[in-house]
Amino acid sequence: MYFAALLARTEDGWEASDMELDDVESLSDLIDRARSAAVDDDTVVALIEQEDAWFGVVRVDGEEDPRYFVSNASAAARSSYGSMLTKELLGSDKEDDELDELDLDGTEDGEDEALSAFTDEDDDEDEAGRGGAEPVPAGPLGDPRLLDDLGVTHKQLMTLDGDALSEIADSLGATEVLEAVR
Image 1 (cartoon, rainbow, N blue to C red):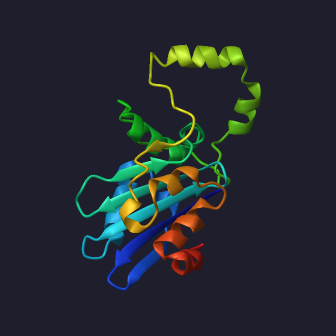
Image 2: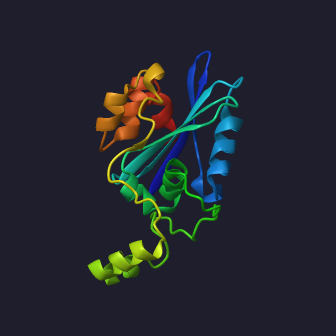
């Protein structure tokens, strides 16, 4: 199961809104939603998590290039929404922004059956079939300093697990508004 929210910085603090991922088909869609939530081109932080497997942070400051961080790239790459972020961070040459059909539990159709059928040999063939694509690293990927100026240090971000989004919101001073949309 996924949870996603947008935190938009305003003169009075942070405003939170639930972000429905069903309508997000590409990373561009996600960025557009973040920009549309901005107040006077101020900072917007998109927070995405898939249970305790991984979390992602996308920071948008006006028309500047977005900045990204994923807590566990290898886990995120196996999920449709997380793969959007990891492909961007790894500079994937594929222009495939379309998502596979999703179940609401955060898995792709047939994923459970497909995972149980894999063997080590299948993994080796899959890697060879990718034509030398850059492997997805285990662990964090992206810009861990993207929230430094907002009160979440890169050291904190790199060590978060469990309820990471709540800890990020707490450091930003946005706990109440995030919990209101959770």
